[in-house]
Length: 390
Image (cartoon, one colour):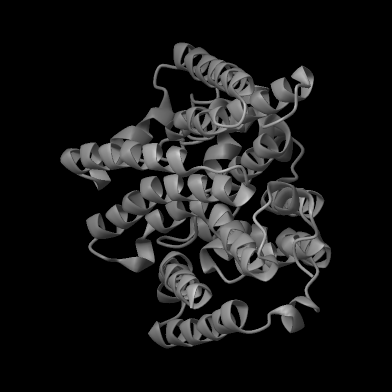
């Protein structure tokens, strides 16, 4: 009975986070009938995933093959999708912010002395722009989003096993927001992927390791990735808080190194630019959500953090679920708030992208929950190093 109740909860949550947010794609490019068909197909898939046997589908699914197909497909599709932005009311300029900022490295190096448009400031932060500048400067941008899908899959395959990576990518394929972002070159999936990878690396290597070089490298990476958006300045604090329960010394090192890297990069580029464009996201949040709601949300967030920390146990599922819950409380209201402010116009619902940082943690939560019931074992060594899916 407990398993059935848990699976019903995941069934409903999947429909909320994946199916609901996928509505934008169908209402933007097709019509309500395609959306209804999509809902039926996804819910049949969920039935087999949660209540029956998913292995017959997974048997024919290989993440390495999918990565190759995505690379080939994006080589042809990305230029076509990118060209749509020159047609009035069509296409996406989601890739332009990163591309324009990275291109300034060939001239002024300021990153933010260019704008996507008169009313469209740049959102990507400095460390993230510099890290991904080779894709722009070497004219290999069609590889950008696929590369980070590969990074996630190789991390899951190495940390858990191949089948975990297969199932993760299969779940990603059920989100139409995922497909939109892969082919239009938007950086929000890549940055979400790296936040996810950082969380795995921190749990795997920083809960017990005393290798100072490895610890410093992971903390440095976390600091750079957390600059991807100005709002992710909280990310080092969040991970350090949860790490404190496992390893206080490494928690302090993570917070100090990652925060210094984050703040230093932001401060330097703030000082050399007349207008520091990444800050516009704070104004956007205030526009989408009324200030009293923001205060209420922050209060709820810190109350939730207290209980998450109190209930955190020494296994990866508890770690992953804590971060998933934290992200959900932050990004779901912002995303839905954007839809409300947009008068429920799904076709122009940019906020559907904002749920993406939640999704990798959500999918791994589902995968690990399935294994929890399969193996009746919550041992952290098994969850991290064991053969999770047979």
